[in-house]
Image (cartoon, rainbow, N blue to C red; front, side, top):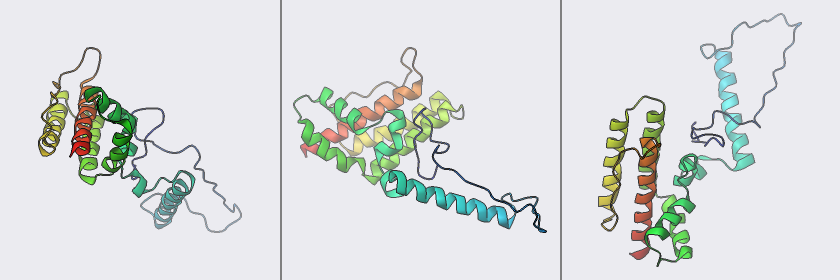
Length: 195
């Protein structure tokens, strides 16, 4: 969770990694017997901390999953299909005269923009809470809409019509919010390439 690892099988964050394993070894003949090693016991705390550090180190070595890599719009939201390719494709739909190569180059920089990342990550978490039943459709879409409105204003996007935050037939409202997020990012990408 701290690395915002995407699940490969759902829209959720990963709950673990199938390649991470642990072996427990004990000496049954030992005179010292511990009956509890939960988090409220020093031994349990130490085991937990060691496992956590080991998993992070293994993920960094095996897949280069580090906080630096995860500080990316795509790495945090590809579970919701917000990817560089999706943003560029939407931008080319809206502005067919733009060059794909130039968009790809600018998208690399935009993907790492900390202010955009903060907003998009927050919107993804609002969508998570809506799917989990914590936030209502109205509160999630209102808050996400306000955030996207701010991005529209900050980036002076005037040539794109914002979508209505109502659910499309047979589609949950959080999917509409995600579509609006891609549309907004496409508008920002266009602004950045033309300025």
